[in-house]
Length: 229
Image (tube, rainbow, N blue to C red; front, side, top):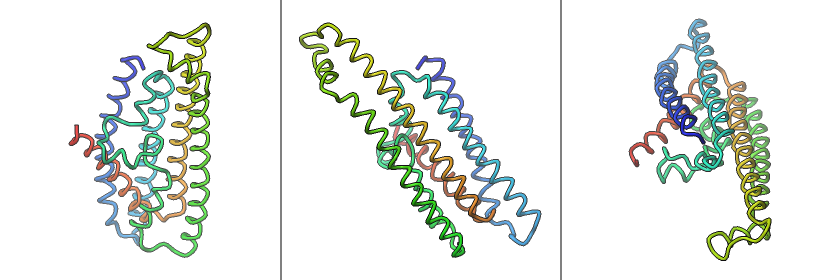
């Protein structure tokens, strides 16, 4: 990734985190709103929309950066701002999409039977899509592990590559980088769509609670990374 692109993304993230902390504070305040107050409910609904747009902006900027990351695409799968503990829960470079269901269960106690049924259906659908992402990701990695490519890789720095092997290795690495970028993009799209669909099932006050938990988790992982730096 050109240094200017990396610096641009880093600058964006720093500013985004400042706005993120502000939104989390707003979500905390909105958690105590009176659900019988129509104006308060409208404010909650507006805040939910703003926070989702805020999160979408992060993934859009990330997607743009990943698309031109080149050799540094691998960095996005193990973000340097996460410490060792935080990296244990990473799934294709970020939290697993289905984590939102556990956070919903932990945050909302008044789900109706209809809501629970819809969330259960969405959970099954999300897990199926997670498997699809991992299958495609595995196929990309497998393509680089083909015998001719591995033989060429072992020759690097050793006996030297024979005619055509260097080109084959370069092509394989381009396929790997492109495939990993696609996997990251698909995973991020699933993360965004899953949260959005969960919010559609919830009332504004319930959505506020879940988004607050998601926002606080994101900050916690970032702060842990800073402390471990």
